Amino acid sequence: MVMLREWRTIFSRKVYIVAMVIMPIFFLVFFLTLMRDGLPQELPTAVVDMDQSSTSRRLVRQLDAFKQTQVVVHAKDFSEAREMMQKGKIYGVYYVPEGFEHDLLSFRQPRVSFYTNNAFIVAGSMLFRDMKTISILGSAAVGRELRLAKGQTMEQAMIELQPIVVDTHPLGNPQLNYAVYLCNVLLPGLLSVMIVLLTVYAFGVEVKTMRSRKLLDAVDDDIISVLVGKLLPYTLTFMLMATLYDVVLYRYMGFPCNNGLPNMLLNSYLLVLASQALGVFLYSLVPIMSISLSLSAFITMLSFSISGFTFPVGEMPSLLQTWANVFPLRHYFLLYANNGLNGYPCHYVWSSYIAMLIYLFLPILLSRRLRNVYRTDTYKP
Image (cartoon, rainbow, N blue to C red; front, top):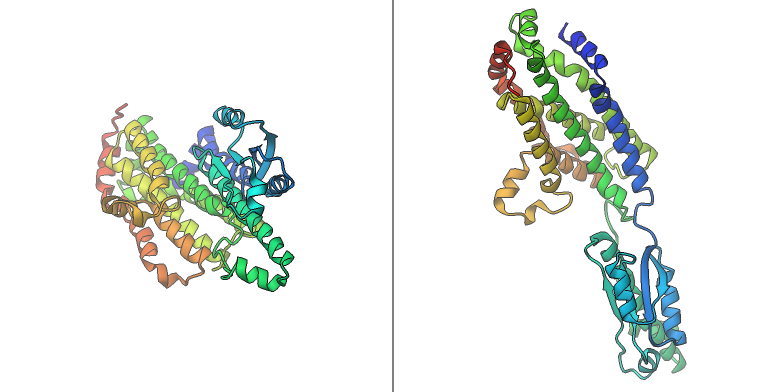
């Protein structure tokens, strides 16, 4: 009876449909469209070539050929390039000094300079990597030609230029795709935010509309029936959205999922249940809807910064390391990183599964308090 009553409430107010269906689909389309290329492409860069030699021009052409770098202007001096960077028109400046080719051929170790705007940390770090790479490769190419001209074989020249060959293998995300890095946690995280906020709203609106006492009378004061009946429609809908997310990410987009789709679906469903339990707990703890909504928004948004997918939890102060384990998103991230990316069996991350299950008992701890709030039926704005 409570579940059918909740379905009628959902379809009678647009806010529920927007929060449960429209916003999750919008998040999915927005982030996958925003990061469809995986990495930022053709970041605008300026070049100041004071040498204007064949070697410097070849170096600039090679820099422009990099996928993440696009040379948009050849500035006549550094002041012009600096002004463009200050206006935000470019993210980096590559400076080749006068006499570059002459010093290079004379073994005088010429020095090139590059400047990146690290206020935009992704763009700045990408350009820094490309500029550093092209500078190293450019000097190596000149050294190789000089050694070949002296009669060395290609193998001898390469041994002197690169005595140690580095063979790198990026694990988990070998394409260094930012969509893999961000979308797999951002999208479930935003879904968790919507779940917690909507759960607080769904329970708070009963008191606001003065229907809570009537609801308790209909179930003979059985608060567990109220909890299960009210949550079930949202559980089914949000699990459907979580299924859509996982199918799109791991089947359509082909993101890494080494333990298989069923395992990731289990992790997503646990996140849905844990988020609902957290929402009920927060409203029961502070049964004033405006305050509990603000508290829920603060806690869920804070979880993005403290869950460890942008900054390692191990490098945080010890207090924050402990506090990080309070958030369901932290445990979901550990499950995704270990199951989805690394392919570890589930028993390697048993503690995260236990933490997710502990969340399910939070509403029971304050169920008596929630029943008293519903029985009082007094709305506090």
